[in-house]
Amino acid sequence: MANDTQRVSEFPAEGSDFIREIIRADLASGKHRTVITRFPPEPNGYLHIGHAKAICLNFTLAQEFGGRCHLRYDDTNPTKEEQEYIQAIERDVRWLGFDWGEHLYFASDYFEQMYQWAEKLILKGKAYVCDCTPDEVREKRGTLTEPGVPCEHRNRSVEENLELFRRMRAGEFPDGSRVLRAKIDMSSGNVNMRDPVMYRILHAPHPHAGDKWCIYPMYDYAHPLEDAIEGITHSICTLEFEDHRPLYDWFIDELELPEPHPQQIEFARLNLTYTVMSKRRLLSLVQEGFVAGWDDPRMPTIAGLRRRGVPPEAIRLFAERIGVAKRNSVVDVQLFEHCIREVLNRTAPRRFAVLDPVKLVVTNYPEEQVEWFAVPNNPEDPTAGERQLPFTRELWIEREDVRPEPLPKYFRLYPGNEVRLRGAYLFTCREVITDPHSGQVVEVRGEIDPQSRGGQAPDGRRVKATIHWLSCGHAREAEVRLYDYLFEKPDPDDVPEGKTWRDNLNPNSLTVLKNAKIEPLLAQAAVGERFQFERVGYFAVDPDTTPERPVFNRIVTLKDEWAKLAKKMSF
Image (tube, rainbow, N blue to C red; front, top):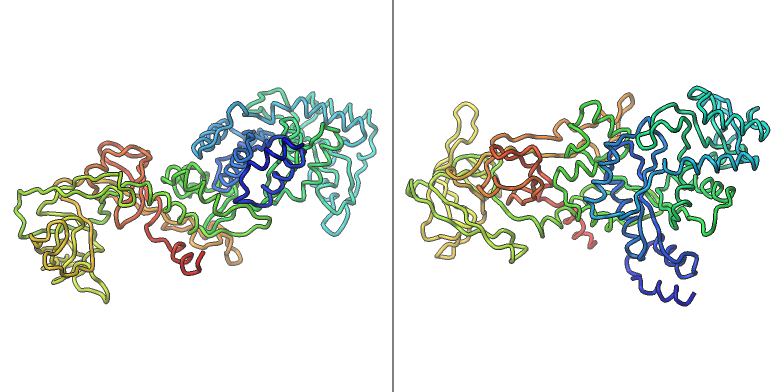
């Protein structure tokens, strides 16, 4: 005991929460000598950011306390599970920065043991074969205020139940004709304890177990047994499983599995504004063509976030910031965006890109001359060095940086106003040329102050605006995809009567710019590389990119409302 207590004291107390307090107490008391957690996804879809929170929690807990975390597939429903999802899950967990080592498991590997334990419960009189239809099972289960009603099959003999269950396994009965139910208490105040279904008949091949089985265990039966088999010490679940915990313990106790038993602990799941987390809904978005696939950068899937360019460090930071709670709440997506910016601000090289280009002509600059200006790669990281940008007579600038007539407090380009061309010269606008039909700006003309090389006025005069630029003769073309929230409302379910969450889909969640201009270095960027386009936002190279046509996804804008709010409220 003394050695265990001494070992526990080595773990840091900071960042404590109710789950860590339970673990520390279990180690201090000697209940457990090590910590074993698990991440148990069902391979019926791609993981989303809610799963990312669970991944970070389970693997981090194991790391903090010197234990290990298992990756286990809860593959108990072969009709919804695919090898594609299994491979995607492993890719996502590794990308987040975690590794299960040799501890990769499948619930289906335990099917024989689970079956033998089911026969044990039958022999103890704790399970029976029921011929009720699914609707009859639900109807006789009762309500939150009315007890359930036992069916006539509940009193079958042990011998009959054992025979029928073995015939179920042998494939003698059609799908849905019979189930195996635990015999607990049809009048329990907890509906989950009213003789829950343990096995159903399902003549379907399994992606991992093949054609060996035609009966499959239900999750509530399989979950505690998987944990017990693997020696899980702390089974971390989301709050929807809180009412299932008595059933979790009941199966372990009735089967008299060795001590110490795994302990189920529940925490609040992640709910994020402007986002849906249901895998069923995410699947429908894919199948119905609302998005381009599971990895569409508008999706909250880990694959979508990765393709969008979100760094795994930002997801881990977000999971750490929101922590774990005992009650469900909704997290503002701006906090997630703040974490993304916090990581990218430190790590993303700066580059120039002009998304909506307008030509600027420096009338007092020689037509054939090219100057090179040194620009820092990342002002936040002095070790990142500098790069050289070419400056010529004709430049590209952003359309929003020029107006024929200024608005109040507009300090950028308009006739007579002077701005700083980032890192190069001070420039005074003399003429703004517009299209006579549309009124849209098509060209800006003016001159530089030759004495202001580097962007500083020799007489010390102040210039209120700095804009970025690109040499027309050197810039490359690129496609830029601007992503916005997938839903128009913070709560996608906030709809009037007769409408559904689909009616809140944002029709402007994707804007594609085909004629963006980028500096030459960006044309050489590899898929997945992330950059800050100065004054524009953070972007990543999309897999659709080609040497002839680079494609960039906007990860997040530069504007950070959450940081402003946090500062105002002294967070």
